Image (tube, helix red, strand yellow):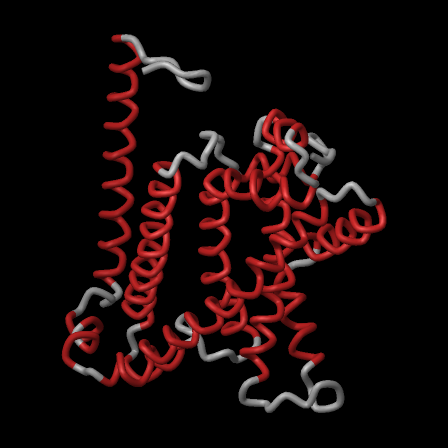
Length: 296
């Protein structure tokens, strides 16, 4: 089926695609074989490296599950705060009032430009006893949450703005024609339709939030999932196997999150509140650089 962005390949193009796919599969298989051979030579495929994850329940109860719980707690709290905050900031950037649009835009661009690691380090220093006097055992957790909220709320604000601006202008014109105010138009007309357009980009950002908790584990001593690699490998001398298992856990959690979002998106589209538009990363970047600047 042809579309604006995709033309149905002809017979020769189909043959080329099959050839390219075959070459890629062969090369991937060779690289995988080489990596497994190298691991086998170094003893990383020996049974004693992998069996603790099946035979020793302490690996899970002492390390992996508590680490996963901390990751989910920090990620979920950051999502719960960053989503509504980002939505408010995104709506603020669309305001007709310069005294609202200017400060909000400055806030968003400022925190989008700062690495999330720096925000976490700032949060950790801010929560020292001489400032906020947060207990030392919970300080890394709150520093991670603070950094994730500040950075991701700014990114979500741009996603929301891009989602609203992706809607046809006739939506807001029709709302004005029946006497709806700007706030009513945003709440009752634009946002409900923009949700499905924003959902893929929002889900991608939520996955980023979950994965970025590992930054706090690496540098702030936050006891999240990936940081448990050090303790497990120190006790069982199986760093490669531990990293592989942790990677599979991340994949499973993120797959569950994206699957739920896909199900939700499908139901929203069936509710006929969508215009069919989808916001991607490029759309958000265009909004940030002013390619589609302006209010509704």
